Length: 258
Image (cartoon, rainbow, N blue to C red):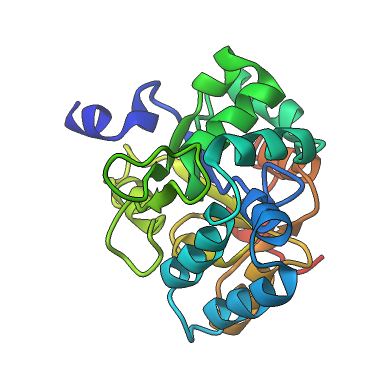
């Protein structure tokens, strides 16, 4: 009972929980990269930032802060959301996966290194308010850059990090309490991600889906983390279905690059 009260995804007594990144995983593009490339200091400066985080030369939170500061200097927060709604698209298989998960008592928990107001606005645009609200979102917030600032004014907003870790939001901290549940209470845990903000979560679940061709695949290979690749949520849906139906184990599903 105590676990159900403190761990929201246990409310429906699921046998499986699906944790997932948002940007570049549920969406086809990374909204923060889009903002940086189009409203901030640009892709040429962003890409070395991402490479430094992947090689563990810099903390994600410091690199990300610089990226978002460059966006805030040029656009108010409402302008950012409007631009994203016009340009960011949903993964082609996510709606089918969402419906399957709902019909089979598999909670979807979004763990994001981005900002919750952006994620919520995009999900409402993609799925409608009721379906968007059915998913737990654990992410960073947005606040005024200084007391009295208007977040919708240029230079008025900044990211407010979820925790004090080098990630800004250490996703492993959300997953670990589920992973540490005693046998008989612990569901099978999945995670899907694509990039540098997913490094802390990569080792925490039973099966990691890493997006093909993205940074997380390289990290898993260099760090010896078992994984399987995916290109869209239709492929994730097929794997999860096979596991739920007992056709394949999570261990056997971790095939690495396909």
